[in-house]
Image (cartoon, rainbow, N blue to C red; front, side, top):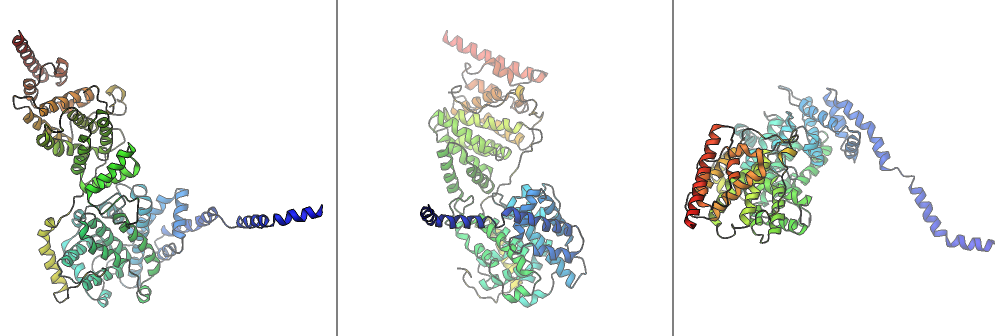
Length: 612
């Protein structure tokens, strides 16, 4: 009846009101609607970037950073497959904004604004998507070259010394003179182009850092130089921050304070007068701040950050931490691989290979050795060429000489030999359409490396700045039983792999070096772990490599096998192994094989006669 209806309705009143609110909330625009609305501005921006009207391009690009328009436009460009088109037109726009000789006035200022906003947008895109995604590997534009040589990306560090090698001394001097003047003198234009300034700012900052460390410059002088850099173009602050981040990753933790303070100065807010004195300064500043913060966070993250890939702690501590993660997981997690790649870039291939081999040799059981060797072999593929070079030249020879009889014995020596052979075979194999990547190691900087430059740098800054400034503090204060990864046989991989007839560098010099060391290992008359390692290496090379290792076996020293026969028991070396060491299709190979086989037969007969 009606009484029941009213009673049930009153009980459901709160739920009914909640449902009405949910229905009303569905009327609000969704993200898809926002993205659809951003398709029109994207088309307009792309159309404007095709024109040669500098002022129009500046007006359009400077409206993009307002609110979240830039993120929406990038989302639409990604969904529509027009991101690379957008990036290529921004690069072309940045190229077209180069200063014209004898051009002054408003048009020159407009061109500088166009260079600045296009540079900042491109840097933000590269930080978001990665240079491998949005840029060409062989692009010849200024921005693409700057990204390859100077820009610090996450897990793509740059060597600060290589960045400094791009600087021109005369241009660095001119920039030092210009940037050390008071603020009022900044109205006079510099003869250097914006591209030249971006490339030579690292030289200026390097001189300033050393002079500040030597207390030749005061904090006020340093602050004045940094403010003058930021006042000119906001892209200069980004270029300077990129070098400072590369510098910070190459120094000790106790030397991080000054470059950190310099980066913080670039993040200091501008006054209203400074914002009003430049065209679209607020929009460009809003683009530069997130870029600088992300660069700083990637190199020196906040202490509360739990999942960080780059740390200011010593490299050995970072390696031990990540290896503990790998050992607990029993495999290579993605973040561990990223950290190991950063350690490869920072410490170099020789350092990383040494640490990996040390972890391999600490294993006591064959099962653990086999599993660890699989992981180490996988890590070596971060840069298999340089890793193999380091293993054969800088890790294995001193390890065998220094630690034989300790932990370089069975079965550790067999595992180490197997790792070396696998790496050599991996270097020999070339897959069609895949090129081996090459990373340049970044070594730790020490003060001793810089002492030879400090006198020149300090004198240069003193000449430029003068000696009148006061010093002050920082302004911001068994063999068969041992399992291992199976390498594909030649017959099953002929379509994917092609073995070169000759070796290329650095593999050839590395093989020659390890073979010369092997010759020293077997030069005596006693059986030692070193001689056993030589036999294990050669036998595994023939067993696993097959026809692929023919170019390697051609580099065997003439008397290496004969010396090995004199040391090792003849029961260990078989006729099949000796015959497979040489190319029996040529006369020289047959002669060498016959000589070794005759020696093997004579020594076997001699041992049998002794038993009789």
